[in-house]
Length: 264
Ligand SMILES: NC(=O)c1ccc[n+]([C@@H]2O[C@H](COP(=O)([O-])OP(=O)(O)OC[C@H]3O[C@@H](n4cnc5c(N)ncnc54)[C@H](O)[C@@H]3O)[C@@H](O)[C@H]2O)c1
View 1 (cartoon, rainbow, N blue to C red):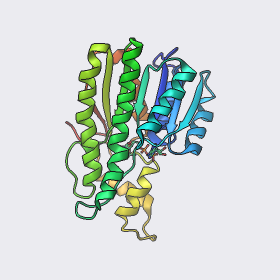
View 2: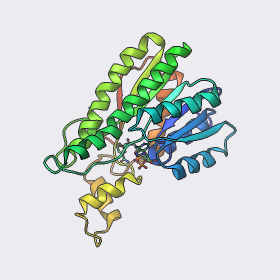
View 3: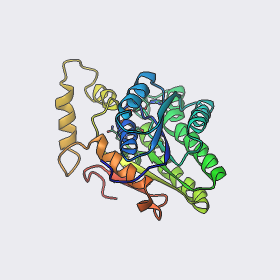
View 4: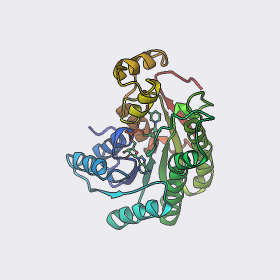
């Protein structure tokens, strides 16, 4: 169903092989965009591409590890070769890190930030470079988290990376603005994607007898005033808005889509 009109727009969705990124890719495709997926999971990327084929655009994927700038550059090269230009870039690839502040080894912290922070940095650098050279403006959306809105007791390194993404989004917005490029961020609340398998495993203390879905509902009830989890599609509506002409005057913002968990 066309709500926004992305006809003729060419998009890259990094992390589009699952969860929020997949919902964003489908939303952009449903609204007329051609979409290229970059994801570490070839199976995930291929599944999203095959689901997008119900629409009438051009779709493809590149297996990408966002922790490697050479991989992100190859993703952009593939998409540019196929599409000719890139108008929209969404950076959604990410992982959770449940380790406590004194539990994580230096190499674990670095490996985590290589994905959740450096991955976003590379995606934005390539997006800016590409869009500035094209001279037609563009839209960049980074997926942060409500966990990036402040420090966290149990997941400080996840909070660190996501918080840095919010700061970085503003710097990208400053650099893109003179070229008509908007960069904004979304802070999702709680969405039952595969990422939550890791969180529930940690919150359940690794005990296989813990009912993970019951635990999930308990966590949701204790958090959002709305009283329910959010959906990946609800994140996709916000992303599509940021990618649309209706958001041309919005720069460097971070939008909580979290059922009212954080009202700042
Ligand atoms: N699900 C939530 O409740 C929630 C809440 C706040 C923020 N987020 C953020 O939303 C984003 C998407 O998460 P999700 O919930 O859809 O999780 P998900 O696990 O469903 O999807 C994450 C995707 O990123 C990909 N990925 C992981 N590491 C990668 C790498 N090194 N290179 C390329 N791709 C890689 C995975 O293959 C997967 O397709 C993440 O940045 C996450 O931190 C999620």
